[in-house]
Image 1 (cartoon, rainbow, N blue to C red):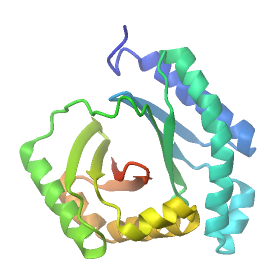
Image 2 (image 1 turned 90 degrees about the vertical axis):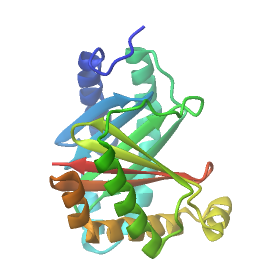
Image 3 (image 1 turned 120 degrees about the vertical axis):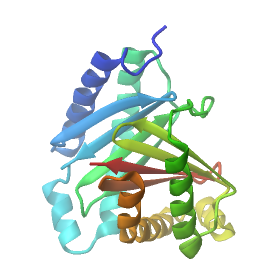
Image 4 (image 1 turned 90 degrees about the horizontal axis):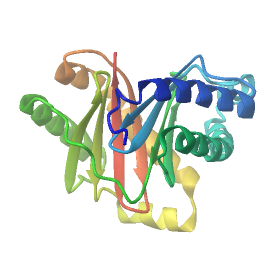
Length: 232
């Protein structure tokens, strides 16, 4: 059975192309770049320059929430189709996904995962980097949000680091989620992420290279979140 990301190299390149084609068919415009990688039984896709002309008009008129709502609705069909393509190509099943879009940067990221296999594979991260990143995230997190009970740092590849935070939701967010106020939760998520962008130089220093992008994903059902740093 295939296990390593390198073993899947050709399959992942094909899936990158497949996802681009699905996005183009569903949105009427495909991304200029789509890169799919595999780590710890998760598919992670980085997408650039995907915004459609209609979305450009909405964003120009500050209808950001409407763009999120529109894109998320269409992405449900995109993911349904892509999951079958992944299963056919890799023989892996996924039952949940997360998405995040940085419209001001024209970048986005998707994560597919299986709820029965959420453990991360241990990766070689220098202890000093781990300690600095823990501290850097905790300091910023505590300024604007509830501190998580635990954090796990994973090196996805040379350009991506993931941080999983557990037990991080406040009670109000749980109530909003249960009542279906997803628009308010999205606004809150954007505020938190923008606060991290304000402190981006701190993370440039920690990683000793430029942090090109930051993505934030929430698993409200299981009280956890993912933050992914995309390095230049």
